[in-house]
Image (cartoon, rainbow, N blue to C red; front, side):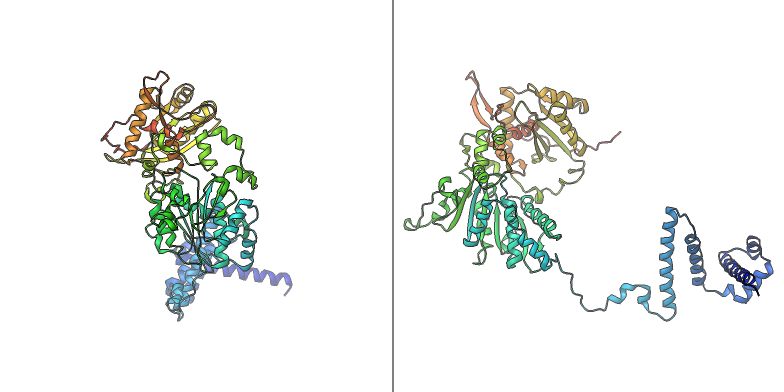
Length: 592
């Protein structure tokens, strides 16, 4: 036989085999012999012979189904150009064939584990849990070596003080990197010593800033992903992040980092719990904050008065807390290492992140002195007292479960109001979002505040428009005094119900007195120290004529403050005194 004849015979045999298989599958699919004969152009007698000889009718159901799955899979596989649907069907058929293989293995004398692979794991011994937050020796070396890179001189001084002294107490300017530095210091100490690190702040949200700095540093420096709200390191050290309302704070032990102590309510009580967590001699305590007022309970701790309390005269100490004495850092007679770092000290220490002239221009003299020069404010002349404001502060992270600030709709379809204090020449604009109470006598909650600088009327209006798209805003109140009318007219275009108010002596008196009434009754709640600072700038003074009393904050072209407070009060101006009817309705907006 020639090669051509041999190839032709093999081809004919292959065709016959494929035709034979196709006839079998079509029969199992329900076609009659006559229908199959017409479809494949084969005599009925030939198909009948195959059916009888191979006992097609006696084939088990499993063989019939798996045969059709296999055939369909092979047909799709041979297509040169496959659609997205084809790939989905191929994936589905492959999974069906795997299941069929398990069934066949079970039918051939297998066990239940062939049908369910998870069963074989039930009787295994206890498995070793996966290591949490693994860090290799090479990664740990990178983290430790990178710790001091980019740190300023005053931060290096803090490190040296921590190596020598058990208690550090630092009065600092705003935004000089204290939280950032101490987050890194604690993380590296945990890696090197295995000691727990406890971060305590005025709110849980602020405490989690430490966590954010740590995880960012680990990821950027050594490609380490740290997980868990409490971070457990391979050596057993825990990084614990707490707000001051944590009922379980006293159950921890470790190095203590207590942030913004001058903004914590009932500091004396909280410090007893906090310092107890670092009672063991191996642990150290670190306290740092920008100042508030000398009336705050943390001031006695800072000044040494708390140390002298209840001690006999012979054991009392004198501590010089002047900037001149503490500028370089000093171990004081009560065994606390203290330092004052104002913004000029930070600049001399290498911090080049500020333009001090801009800060002076953007803040009132009193605000600049308090926030950047470490001067304590005197709230005796303020209408709103810090002690009363402090009782209105809450930890929104823990207490406001219905508010999700990082969601697309942070407050769902719940009603909110917007108050806006527009920008004038040289000062800031401020926006406040307030949730009115749902029950009579309930709380007004300040969900969000924001300030803007250097925006024209249209851009200020666009800022308001942005929040109407993410909140269910039912009321907008804008100060339209002077140039504020331009913002008001732009907002009216997309929110016709916006209300414009024009400041006068009677209106300002009403706004302040209504808000003061809510604060004294602890019915205005907020999270954030800047809100308290803003209210403290509002003072009482006589009008130019001397005939009336009014309320003002520094709103000159050279300085701007109180803007957040006025934005908040704008929301409350139309609310009646006393037991006002609460807002019990939920308005669901429909987009056209």
